[in-house]
Image (cartoon, rainbow, N blue to C red):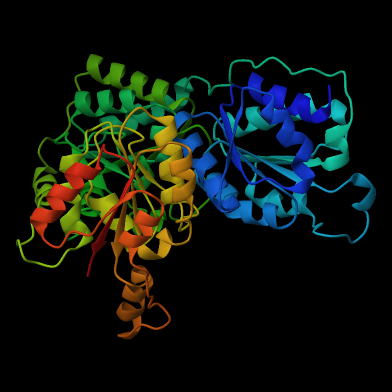
Amino acid sequence: MKASDLLVACLEREGVDRVFGIPGEELEDLLFSIRESDVAFVPVRHEQGAAFMADVHGRLTGDAGVCLGTLGPGATNLLTGVADAHLDKSPLVAITGQGGLERLHQESHQAIDVLRMFEPVTKWNTQLDSPDIVHESVRKAFKVAEYEKPGATHLELPEDVAAEETEARPLEVRDRATAAAPNPDALARVRELLRAADRPVVIAGNGAVRTRAATQLREFVETTDVPAVSTYMGKGAVSDADERSLMTLGSGADGEAAAAISRADLVVTVGYDIAEHDPAEWNDGSTPLVHVDSEPAEVYEAYDPDVEVIADSGLTLRSLTDWYRSSELTFETGWFADLRDRIAADVDRTPRERAPFTVEGVLPVLREAMAPEDVLVSDVGSHKAAIARGFPTYEPNTCIVSNGLASMGIAVPGGLAADLAVDANVVAATGDGGFLMNAAEIETATRAGCDYTVIVFNDDDYGLISKKQRHHTGESFGTELTNPDLVAFAESFGIDGYRPESRADLREVIAAAVGGDMALVEIPVE
């Protein structure tokens, strides 16, 4: 078979359902090979959108999403979404076309060194410079992308290689490599710290959700009565309906979640990633620290664990829970209850009926309209912090926040990927700045038969930057925007558009939009 046929056969063997991307001349053989396969090709409107779709697919399923772009500008456009997957630890395989090998030794049309460009934002990448290495390279790309900690990989396919014949065949897909059981000596040291503690606290990070350790974490929290705080990407690892949940770092009008950490005499992090959240914001170095994760902690003055348990996080938590049950150990109870009450009161606050809309005031209405298993995909901007701190999340992977690279523009394409990946209602929440970066993917969504809700918080501004500028200088500059009529914009794509004018309208519109046909809700906010 041709190398392009082999590559697609390998994708089929890996269980790939769809590839998101944009066609290019150098991809001709590969595209026609996809046409003859069980893999669907989803043409998008911008390669960045394709990469974000693959990124969110990987976050939600644990299986690498696949995105495709041609050489030159196609590859550079993919880069932001690939980097987002890299820092958010989301499994993704990017494929780019390239010119023929005979012209890559010299300057030529659209040719740049894509491999060197992708190297800093991938776990592994290679050029398929022979048809006989395609099967091994595709298997390695998926294996490396998906094992802990997951991330992005990249394959470059020159157009002449794509057309060459090979006798190679796809490799079998084996069970994924998994983290080992915890080291007994490390567990013994953790138990010593727990025995010496009265007020431990858990910080649940991205890894607690990603490794499917939420069940064991919830059991640990329930058994020990230890409170839990999540990072933005750890939301849902412990249900915010649990009285021991202090929501996320930064939750509470006066930083009550951080106050709990300052009151604690032992901090246990589970799947914590400092690329997502700087530990200097909560760790003053005076409290003993335990790091539970699949990889050792980064070397950082503000995050220097007393003990590191490098193993399967779920097995580690189960071992500690079983030990606690058999011990006579008890921790101080109720020391965090006042903080939990203040966080809950801050989240549940209801604005006056005629008060201007704010993100914080809209979130309780949105939460009421969404079931616990429904998925919210948040874009990046001032609304992201409000969602992370004030949107109660009850199940893992139901609040998707990009907080590693933290790239604007992820919500609309991410909502598309989520709608295709899960059997639940999906809401993409974005600001007007992030929305218009990839708003054209609404057309892709309608063509793909998606039905999800896009909520645009519109302040005609890059509001987060304005807020920070005003905090630092008392004024802002370079942040003001003008926007089209977003309702008419939505309707031009053939979807419903809404702009509520009162809180009664807001409740009615959101209740109708969530779970209905594809729709956009524009909410003017201050």
